[in-house]
Amino acid sequence: MARERRKRPLVLLVDADHRTSIRFARLLCEDGFDVEVATDGDLAIERVAQGTVPDAIVTELFLPNAGGEAVMQFARSRRSDVTVFFVTNHPQLVPEFDPSVGPPPRVFTKPVNYREFQIALCDAVGCKPLDPCAAPSNSRRRQPRDTSPK
Image 1 (tube, rainbow, N blue to C red):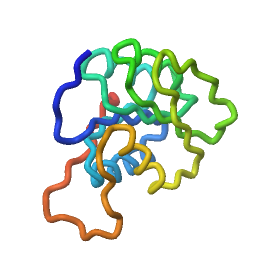
Image 2: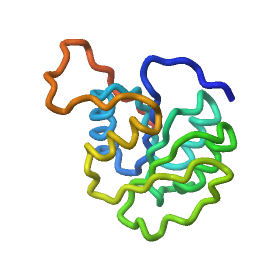
Image 3: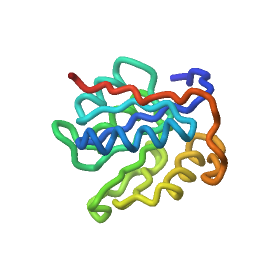
Image 4: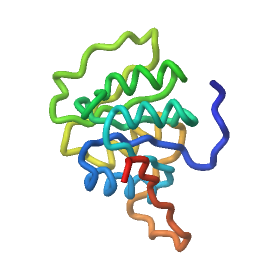
C-alpha cells in the first residue's frame, strides 16, 4: 500500500491504560507526530483495517482482546514495512520475529526513557527529533485522536 504524504508522521498508540496512553500521546503530539489511541488490540486492528496504516505502531505486548503481536501481524499484512515498538515490563517475553516479513520490532522496557524512545521513533519514520531544550513554539498543538469507544 502506498504511503499517503503527510506533514506529520502518524503513530497508533495501543495501551490498555487510557490515562497513561493519553499522556504519552500528548508528548508525541508536542514532538511533531499525529497520534491515534486505541485501548485494546481489537480496536487497534479495527483502526488499521478502516484507514491508512500508520507510520509506526507503539503497543504493549499484552492487551485485552488481541495482543500487540496480533496488532503487528495485521498491520504488516496491510503494509509490510510498518515499524512496531513494544513497550513492556516483560521484554524477555517478546518473541523472535522473522526479518523477512518486515523490520524487527523495537522493544522498550517500562519505565521508558522518553528521549531514547523519541530518537528511535524519529529514526524509524524518517523525521528529525525535536530539541528538548528548545523553547515551545507558539503554534497551536494538535491533540491525540482517541479511537476508543466512549
